[in-house]
Length: 282
Figure 1 (tube, rainbow, N blue to C red):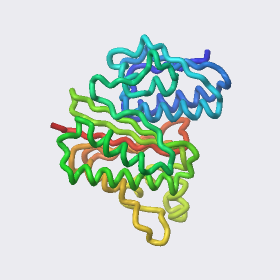
Figure 2: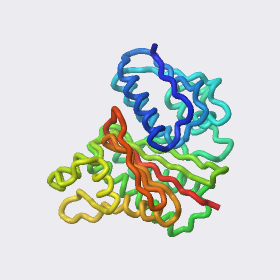
Figure 3: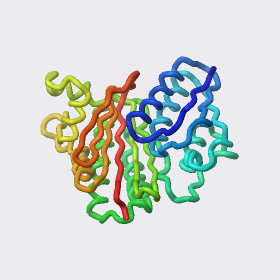
Figure 4: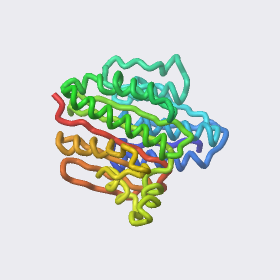
C-alpha cells in the first residue's frame, strides 16, 4: 500500500524523530506514484518538525518522483497547524484547501533556503523567528546572540555540509506550556565525517562528535574565526532552562538543564537536525 501512517504523538524527542526517519525509509521503496501521508491516527505533531518532514518529502519528490496526498479533513484541531504553517500547501500544492493562514499567531512559518541564500535566511531569523510573540520576553542582547549563532550555523552548513538540497526551518509557539521550539535541518554530510577526519579519528562516534562541536570545536582551517555558534546556543540553553537537541549520524543527542542524553536511531539518514527549545517564557 502506498501510504505511511503516523501514530500517536510526534514530538521533539528521539521517539518522534524515529517515526519521521521510518517514514522516509519506508517511502523510499516506492517510485513514480501517489503516496498518502496518513494522519488519521495522529493526535499531536510538534509543528517545528515540519522542517524535517518537508525535507524528506522534497527528497522523495526528486529522487523517487513521489506525489503526495493528505486528507485535508484531518487537518483540524491540533493538526491544523500543518496547514497553518505551510507544510500541507508546499507538499500537496492545493491552494483551495491548504493555503497557509496562521490565525492563531503561533507558528514560525516553514521555509527552505539554498545554502548560499544568506540574506533571506538572516531576514527570516530576524522577522519570523525572533519576532514571534512567544519570544517577546527575550532581551535585545539575547536575540542578537541567537541571531549571530544561527548565522554561523547556517554558514557552517554551507561550508562543511556538502549538501545539494536546501536548509529547511520551522517553529512553533506553545502558549499553554510557554515554550517556543525551532528546528533547522539539512541533508549534508552530518557531523561525524568531518570531525573524525579533522581529529585524525580520535573521535569515532556520533555522540562524541556532537559533544565536541557544542563545546566549540571547529573544523575550519587556518584559524578562521567561527565554530562557536552551537556552543553559544548550548550555553544559552544551559543558563535559561531551554533545551538543545541535535540529530546526526544515527544519534539523537539532547541537553536539558544540566542533563545530557543520547539515543541511537535505527535506519538513520544523512545530514543534521538542530532543535532549540525556549522555556519559562513570560
